[in-house]
Amino acid sequence: QVQLVESGGGLVQPGRSLRLSCAASGKIFSITKMGWYRQAPGKQRELVAAFTSGGSTNYADSVKGRFAISRDNTKNTVYLQMDSLKPEDTAVYYCNLNQFEPGWGSRSYWGQGTQVTVSS
Image (cartoon, rainbow, N blue to C red; front, side, top):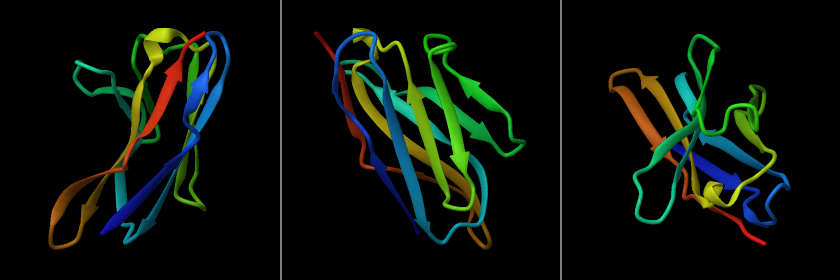
């Protein structure tokens, strides 16, 4: 089992910044993908940014140039630096980790979510 603990959400004014953190613990094997999704009220959960197993990054078009994902492999932690925040970035942000587990195959884990509210 893997546990994901998120932190860093909150209420912020438009144009300001926030930094989210997600620390993974437990039985970490070969991570194939780790990153952030978000879900706004009445909308489907969507990818925000993620690292893939090849080391590349994927970003939603709506956050390119404003958000940056980074990681500390020694701490199994990923970060999401969110700059120039907009009201439409308001959502619950979820950390996600996919890994290949021996004897099980590919498994996906989710954090509990952290609320980000962008409002004046």
